Length: 472
Image 1: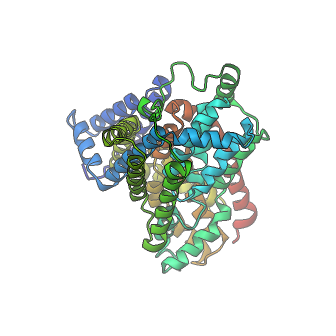
Image 2: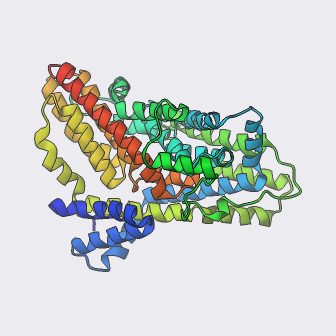
Image 3: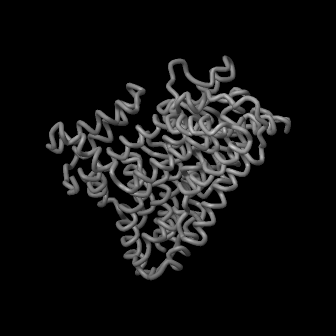
């Protein structure tokens, strides 16, 4: 199943079916599984095509990486729970005379602070603030929105992240861009044009302080939480096992906020940033492994029995299994879409729109549609960047102008849109996991804001194209 075939309009069927069923049934696993099954049947692979798809997709280095990352994160979270670190952090923060708005602002700032990993950020924010936000009657949907909107949108704006390196790497060899230094310079100059990422992060803060009003399903969720104290909808299924939400602290030991919470967080941050600086790649999975080992050793010295430590680690891994199952099926669906030529079809039916005035807006639109349909931002970058940027260089005569910056930013912003709000996106899944929110409830409450921001950005790109970049 390595070949890529062109199925035309049918190539949109699996992704469209998954998204539609997810909203109708509110069951993400069922929806993704049915979409994958329908996809392999459409390709003529028969019923055995489904297990073959799973075997080929999940037996890869990329999925093994995120599987291990999830398992180590689950272990760290379980250790946090067992040592009472989260409760200690909550008590420490509460002494700062917080209000409901301030609790949410803390989450907003924490998400921006953990800029180096869009995987760690939503899990860290959601896990750390869940108890506190529950106490102040912030809906889990709102917490997931805050965590999600300060992950990928922030990571794509910072030049010292894997996102920046990946995007810059794609630019090498296009037009006059000959090396990594020139490519990174173009990325940096494109940051002000990355409207979706910038506006998404700002809107979160404005929603928190009330300058942007609540509307749609989010308004209903917040009203429910404030009036009844129910942070979850009745019948909701949090995307996090009870092992990571109901684990009690170990009795009879005295834990330290510094050793059991702050130190592991610092280990994750220092290892991830340090490996990026010295090795050129942030070793996020290795960072969580190191934090889990240090936490386990610390717990043993504090008097927690070894058997209890191992039982807690196993419970943590079990607690993230709902998210792992969703990610496994999402990865399979993404691979299926690639094999059916979904992205190629979308590009083919829209390439006739690419005029100088429309180029940034259409580039953003194509990237957004592909990313939302496939749930992958990096895959979208890899597909759209080699198509849009050479066209832009043709229009500028191989000169690096604001049109180039705008198009690079449009690809990045469009890709982030899909990563930000698609139910198929791993980052969206991780935001639901960290906040222990129902996954579809998170998607339904966040999409209106994401679409509103995307629509505004599309209009601005049109204005920029017609009134500024058209003759550049």
